[in-house]
Image (cartoon, rainbow, N blue to C red; front, side, top):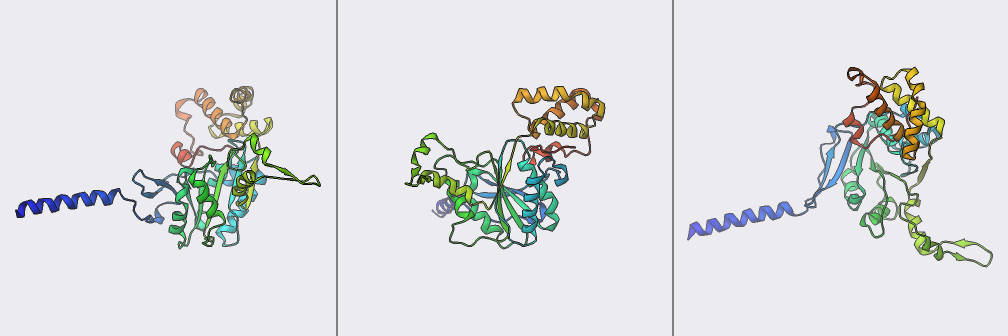
Length: 317
């Protein structure tokens, strides 16, 4: 009888252990000394976890050209942030492959020694944003919560969590946390032709947006700083191609000879972005360089480039 009872108790304890492991656990902070950048991931079990990014893309602010105005706005905002001065949440929007995410990585590299840290969060995990902010709120470092390629479909839960965290929650804003997001959509939500019908007209001719439009605009307006990026013209694109080819060890004569081929490459992809320039340079260098000279120490390792996304590309000579 005692043996049966002990066996039953043992099985019950094992079952309780399994159930406790499956239940959502309190979000615990990691060892912050192991990295300057982190990824937040929610597991299938519901557990939230911050994992260190071991190799951050080794890109610097000086590497980023052809976007001087945008770079200075982001740099100054980030500098004020790490100095403890007032700073804004930032929304970077515009043409793809023009250096939006690369600029944020460059700021991290520039100011990490002053205590700047970065936490990358997917838009699907934005619902946990309040928990992430609570975990870092008492830390001495300054944290950028970074979401790349942010956009929402109708009814996604992360939309309201982000909106509340930016401005509107009962809790006061945390002085050591800012949100930097990149997006190809200015208002982060899809916009439909039928929404134009919600606009109203006053007697004196003024036009006022309807409630649906106001709701969509309200999220992007909560970012204090908007920075727009535009497609590169042909000369800018060629300058970026030349810089990347030079970084891969291609001679000046070969770079000049590759101009026409690089333009065809961009035409086939329908874009003259920095990312396209980088992809062309890799292809050209791979086809025209001997194996021994392919590795170039001035470039970040492939794994490091991909650690926080591929190069956005506004990098030129």
